[in-house]
Image (cartoon, rainbow, N blue to C red; front, top):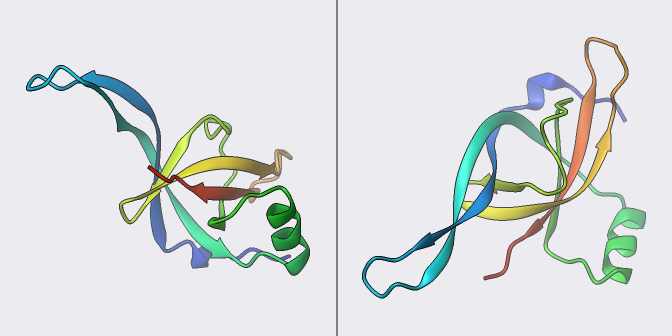
Length: 111
């Protein structure tokens, strides 16, 4: 699968949740805290990938490609256009080549 970095025309924010206390009612809530942003492009999941995810009861997923970045981990949260996603899988290309990419499978966070 050839990846053209010129297709990376959208931004994704990566970060994690942080617990904060609401000063009005003293309830603890989790808020997204951005660590960094990256350019990305959408990729199309194959039917085999879709069936595998459905078999594992993983729905509401997106597949995106970014330039290889070791800072992105499966414990992170990704935000695209205000919608939060868990990073559930990273297919990393960590060769020493100049143009390497990571394919990230993201699952929409249901609150």
